[in-house]
Length: 318
Image (cartoon, rainbow, N blue to C red; front, side, top):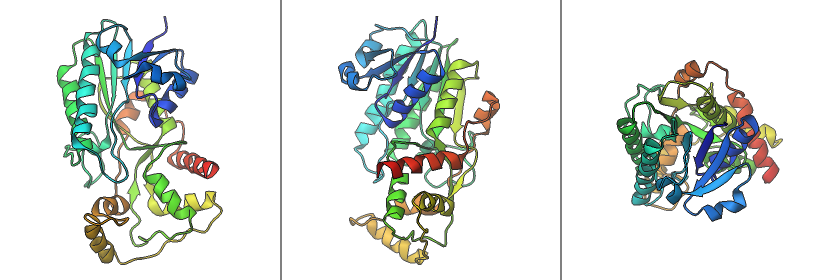
């Protein structure tokens, strides 16, 4: 009998891509879950069945594995009601995990957390030994859920807490879109004096890792997820410009002036604030060594190729 997998959050960017990937690469029976299962009918492609969260909680179905993607993510404006983060990312995760713990068929629980449970201003490379210091309600709520899972997983079952760096791919919305919009309009990137580097993970590499965990005997635990190489911001700008057949424009605005403007932006409706400036100037490098040692296979695509595919999708849809 094929493994029966339930996926929450299947209407989001990650869920939409993951269900397609798993349906094409595996023989799993895929079941999508939502608060209102009938709302999934219009997005049930690549799914074998649909169910509601209430049906999960009541034990109406049994599954071999749970992949919990659903959650409230932080927006590009770093805004959101605090209670919403904790209700969705913590309380809902508890309810889904409790059912997993009591499901006699279930063997694996995969929880998609975030690398932002660690810090917004990293000092060095972020590996699994880095001490978490979550700063935002998003990070704090995910960290609470992580701890609940670790403390309550029954013997004989396995949990996998995955902390991905920024996931990107065709159809996603986020900071990559903002940078693309800047370059595509011919506007200059203003921070030429700082060429920071950040880790990303393409949706294909992310989906590949999920498939490997579901398909193989991988040790339970915590894993950071990223492409093999971090990407320098100036290289990313060049990549975007190349796909647009444009010449990149990078200028050197005084960094102290930007910092002053960012402080004002914490209180005024201007395009820059300290949170955004940190993302534009700080390094954010994530190690994927632990998960690669477990999988013992190379990731399907390089960081550059993954970014190129994402940017091509922006060009196609613009």
